Length: 391
Image 1 (spheres, one colour):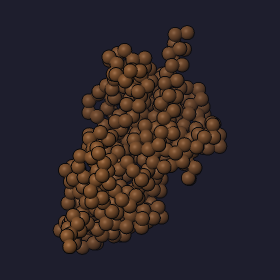
Image 2 (cartoon, helix red, strand yellow):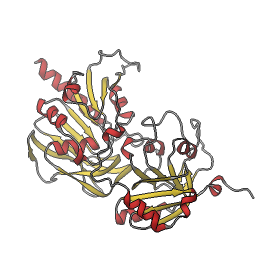
Image 3 (cartoon, one colour):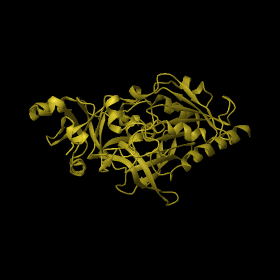
Image 4 (cartoon, one colour):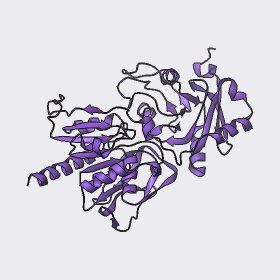
């Protein structure tokens, strides 16, 4: 009888901050890693998840039991590298089965030095995180998997927590770049010829997001997270976009956002950008017990009553009242969307200025396309603003 590659892999152990231990086999690079243990409920889209900068310093537990069955290709990454601190799976695929596959997930994790663990009861681990909350975790494989568990636990407890972490600048682009608009014929338009120009603050942006805007005729100038208001307006933007990203929103500088709101420039934020808009308006943010991660989260648009199935990746949320319109330094604001699972604020809308945001991912990579209309709403705001300026 032949031995499977997984059975031959080095031993590995996962140690949670509260002392719970899971044992399995190495998956990806052999070594050790630390991060915040979170779980993602998507049945597919693991490649997009792993390359999403919002997962920086997080160890992701895949709740789908079988992972890696479509391998890894060169078209679906959402950034230039894998950002997760570690990957936890139950049953890795032995052989990928997809015509676009170029290598196995195990090979990709190994090549990028990402430590993971397989053979773990991810259902039990997910239930534990739901009950106890997201917490620090360490994965140790190879010789260290046999070390004293108390010593490994001490290392986990010495790792930094996500609360108070300022991470956007660590994942954002260092240099500005431009994504050209795409014309009706599917070809890129010459720079400077698009109907709309958007300055996008890269707080951990996914590659599909500027593409979704480019498909709508928008030229997107992607700027570093540390960009100043002067640098934002140097692009002569018709609108400003706040991207997703990792870390605690309480650590962010809100100066640029407040400047944009003060000028009345159309503004659209998603995920981390939603939290920053909330804080700029005077609302607080707080850490969720275990967060929302996956591509099957139900959200209701409170204006229409429509329910959208949406893609999420967030561990923090905005603390804004659901039962009334709020007065803010920039006019009246209301909660526009709410999660039907737990009542968490999923969107904000200013009533007196052209600004709105959602807590989820309308670019849907991976995920359903129910929320794609939000990019059209952004286009409409910019068109109305242009019309008002001409009048």
